[in-house]
Picture 1: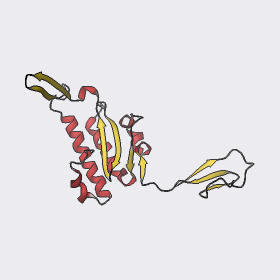
Picture 2 (picture 1 turned 90 degrees about the vertical axis):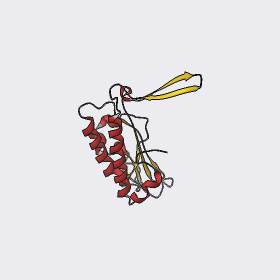
Picture 3 (picture 1 turned 60 degrees about the vertical axis):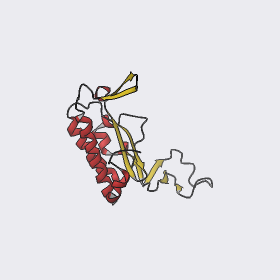
Picture 4 (picture 1 turned 30 degrees about the horizontal axis):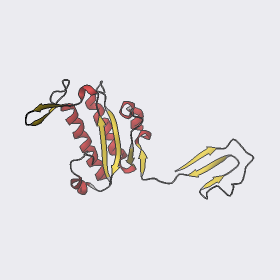
Length: 175
């Protein structure tokens, strides 16, 4: 991929000795050879334009393998269909490559998050995980996890690594 940056100054028509070999300067523009990175920021995919609420976390890592882009796009479309008119606070928390395995983590609005209740007893702490009142059976979260799991399987298949998926545990689980 080559990117052209327009140079407003036409005084310098020859490249300076300090300019790397891959950068060529002409009277009209500077041409930079960007190379072909195997990864990309998911915020540059069309799906991020179609579903901006999913990418509303400016501090999150959103790096995916280029070969995963079609599987990731389909995953976003399926999640949006499940969410319907309400986004339920869905947002990608992190997208990364974990030793060649897609790690796609999300978050929901606080009212859809599970809570941990710790009660102190004479025998020690008693820990209980409470499902949210808005989704008492945690169906929304489980449905999204299943969609992400299928998306991860599609991404691995796109790279020809579906056979190795079982070595990493449940699809969508990050280390």
